[in-house]
Amino acid sequence: MSSRKVSNIRHIKNIKYLSVIIFVVLCFAIFSISVLSANPGTVLDFQKISDTQGGFTGILNDSDSFGRSVSSIGDLDSDGVNDIVVGALKDDDGGPDRGAVWVLFLNSDGSVKSYQKISDLEGGFTGILDDYDNFGSSVSSIGDLDGDGIPDLVVGAYLDDDGGADRGAVWVLFLNSDGTVKSYQKISDLEGGFTGILDDSDYFGSSVSGIGDLDGDGVMDIVVGTYGDDDGGNARGAVWVLFLNSNGSVKSYQKISDTQGGFTGILNDSDMFGWSVSDIGDLDGDGVTDIVVGTPNDDDGGTNRGSVWVLFLNSNGSIKSYQKISDTQGDFTGILDDWDRFGWSVSSIGDLDGDGVMDIVVGTYGDDDGGNARGAVWVLFLNNGSVKSYQKISDTQGGFTGILNDSDSFGGSVSSIGDLDGDGVMDIVVGAYLDDDGGADLSANRGSVWVLFLNGSKPVQLPVYNEFYGKGETTNFSEVSDLTNVANPVLENEYVKIEFVGSNFNVAGKNLSALVKGKSNFVSVDSENLPSFNKTANITLKTKSYPSLYAYEILRNGQPCSAPDCVKLESNPVKFKVSHFSNYTTNGTGIVPEFNSSLIILLLVFTVLLVVIHKAKK
Image (cartoon, rainbow, N blue to C red; front, side, top):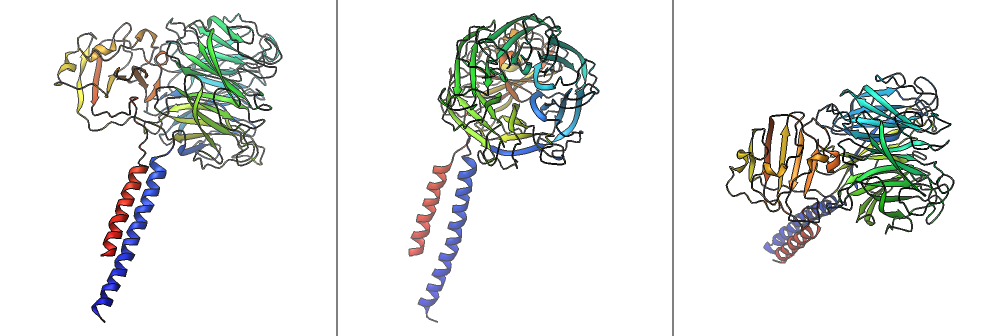
């Protein structure tokens, strides 16, 4: 064989080897582009919880509608993982459709570690429920209302008959750390100090949300929906802002409807304003918490396509201004169809895309992606109330690969759950309350919830400059000398985490920025607005380098929350440690988006190809 033939054979083999290398590099590039450039709001992973999945061993019966409501409750059992509460409004404990809620203690993968049922027969609850009250029609964490260091709940029973047929009620439940009920306070047409006027079929308690300490009296307040209210016309709906006492009774209130509360938005008959409601934090930066309200029967663009209203509040609960989001308003360009019922559920989700503005997630339980009424949720990235962009999650969109069946009503409820998997991105839990897992047929309606781990923008902490500024004990927040021992720390573009370890600290009236002594570019936290909380408090202060953002961020058990919803510390002395993360890179907004390396990877691929071609020619 001639040397030329041998050379050609080797040349061909080299080309084959190089082809394989090129193929591998291209596959890696495609994989990297698809993974690393994942859009905020798409689904990274999921865990279903039902009668047959997710490690849940509680007993569900046909038509229980487990998942009709859902809420995060923080880390109730102090294991470092956030827990949730799920409503099953058709549960028959004690009588038909009296209802129940399930406290689910979660693992970080979204599965159930243990649970506690609260009903007419279980969980230490001794309140009187009647047949068809539908206790669990709505549920929300309310923070630590009674100051015992344990988060409390408010639960709707929207078909309660106090004062008249289906006027509705809500129950404030003071919990033990195991999820059982320590005590309670009912609020209805006859109980709890509430003197607002309820009429038959108002359905007070059809939705409910904690709203922080709106009036600044040191006690958490709530907002309650009455979607059947007739102010201005038949079933136009309303919400009630209830200013509470620490025992759960009502101190005062403000109604928001077609005729009250300073609301000048246009509501039509049967819009059902107040079917869903959620705190959205201080969206407009005026120091007052704002809310978002669902009207699933709104007809903008077509029959029952639905809408949500972002309501900017005054501290007395009245409306300062508003922004409607629908098929025709609020810059929302997603496709809604008739009977989608956008706004059936709604929740704040924190700042998912890292632009400094709170975002929301909205359920459309009648959406037909993949099949009839399988349901969907929309993640809406907001400007100051209007929609900047969105991501739909359904049977066919958003990277969600869970199995949905016709009439599951995925999106029937939704709640932020904090960063459950610890990747720095908020996660959500979505109810599919007509799911048939465990039932004998396709109309069992036992229900389910889906824990969705989301993609999103998150801060990146590069090499740690110094693990701690200092740690020790103090009774004087203005003299923490341990924190000044680091030589010339650079505070631009950094996170500094101040972690108090212990229980019941007191920072009322204190300037937390004094913990980083002499560092004037940190702002103080208005601690008078911080309610009671006795777990470890992770308080992250941002510099003022980016004034468009909150000047500080507070994490409670790893879950971001706005100032009115977070921490009040009460005892002496305080043990603390302060972690310092330097080289905190930014994109000009103080937040680093998920790394999108598409262009860099493609450039590398083409460079490799050029080298390969050049060598092949030789």
